[in-house]
Amino acid sequence: MKTQHMKVFLNAAILLSLILLFNAANTSAEPPLKVGASDAPPYYIVKDDNVSGIFGELISKIFAKADLPFIWKPYPTKRIYNSLVQGSLDLYLGPLKPEFEGFNDSVIHSTFSPVKIELCSYYFGDKPKITKKEELSQKRILIINGYTYGGLVNYIFDPKNKVDYREIYSFEQAIKMLKAGRSDYHLDYKKTGEIYMKDNSEPDLKHTTLFSVDLYFMVSNHTPNAKDLLAKIKAAFHQVKE
Image (cartoon, rainbow, N blue to C red; front, side, top):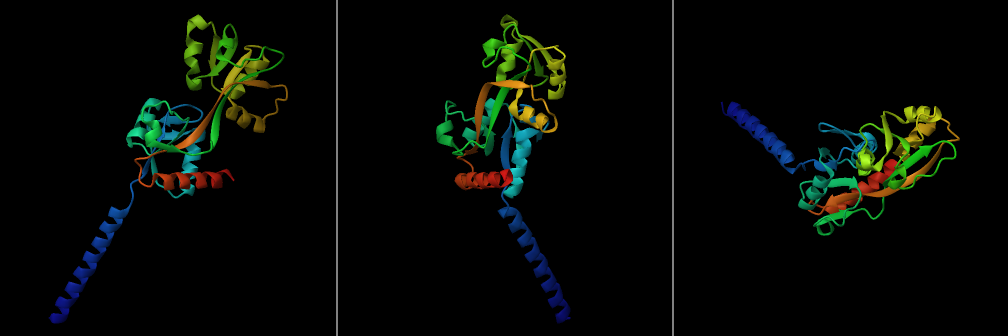
């Protein structure tokens, strides 16, 4: 009888130990990091809580390489910076905003720019170069449906600026329309053009740059071990890049 009681006691003790170990593991597990994204195709493409696009995929690869769990927090751009300052967001890949209230005191960032956004004007032939938005006036241009072009669409859509624009759906479609003389210029990001040119030869295609913006990894100072996290992200980026 004593042996049976002893077995029951041992089984209960083992079960209790397993429960305590399980609870301890769950307690010590760190919550996933909160990473910001603002819908800006083709770089960030937000659909509900899912994020894809060039930067979305890059960040997913970096966090996988660094073995860091994370969740996306798709917000408008202004809310992203406010959330970094307040600490409700851990990380964002985007342009620095030192003019944003509290940014310099509450956000640290990489000392190098891992990527940049470059908006270009593509065209064929001997057309005038377009290097600033004012030169879009009275020009026939193509733009990708849904792209904001860093806010440039507000200028394009404003009737007083007299931009003759047409919305299309791909770089390939733009090339065909430019060649057919149905438009004179196509506005697109340099990265998109590079991706297209990997599989297509267009030796006569020209382009000029309208603007270029360097992006940085930014981490909220409210995030535990913020400097260590930034170092891990930087190291993982270089591994992914290689």
